Image (tube, rainbow, N blue to C red; front, side, top):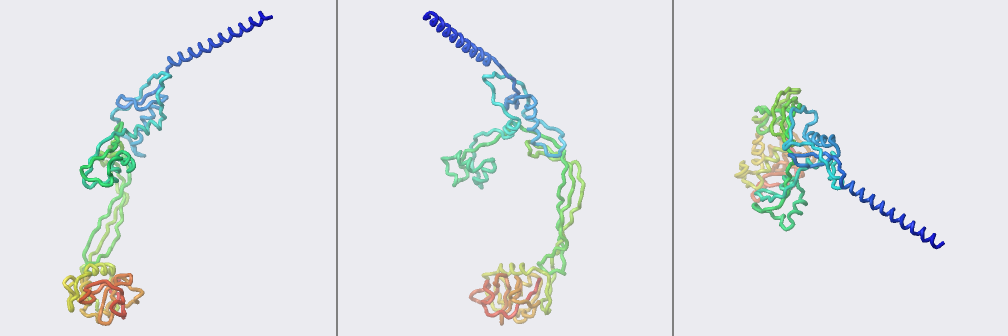
Length: 377
């Protein structure tokens, strides 16, 4: 019985040794097969240098097509397209144990179009700002700060040097395309003079409008940047309409009761404000050398072709009357023995007195308002 047990145990040991040997041999065989196994891939090459590896010839060729297509305008007729250096596809056999990084078509296209970054030293020029430098080099401010941790970027002076990355294209795609598009035709502005319009006033007699033309061009680009354009045909679809402006040369008297003239009260108010700070001179009419209240008003309006008497009381009869609540820039604000020009916001500009000269004040600074007269509207 003991002999039988020992025999059975020996058989089990032998069986275990055989099983282990088979397993080891299988592992060796599999490892050996893998070590000598190969797979075919397709390389996309630029100038003979592999830039992306794909699993099929069709995928690799699609990468080249998509790179070229990215620089073709929608609807354009492609006359010629070439890559410099040349882009090619080549089958390469790789060991299974040393298989390459494989790209999808989209990944390969994005990688090629993004280009390569080269570290450069940039010398700051006069007028440079960090923001402008970042924009010119397609970098963010954070990227520049990361590259120049030891530099004081808040104070940049001409001649300072900073570190940047410059993007260089992997390939230059040159295209020639025939492109047909609609383009705007600018209108012209024609200025004419007329004594029927008051001096230093302008009236738009006719508004201008843009025209449209259909243009066919032969356009050459390098990586999407236009390097040459040749117009092959141009056809006007809609003519531009000229803008006609009448520049006034006329003069009119403001003496007629109830009569107003076409013009810009805001232009009158703005013109009058130029002389704030100049002196008050009794009896004067000079906007720069000195004027009194009515002399200031008549000289301002004379610039716009409107003549007035040198008399604040007479001025109360000019134009047409409006309420103070309705007052607009350019209106006359009349007081007893005084006159001013309304500028808006409850304020007037006028020759106040010898102490203040020509100044801006509130409407009631020199007393109660007895009339508001509108001369232009």
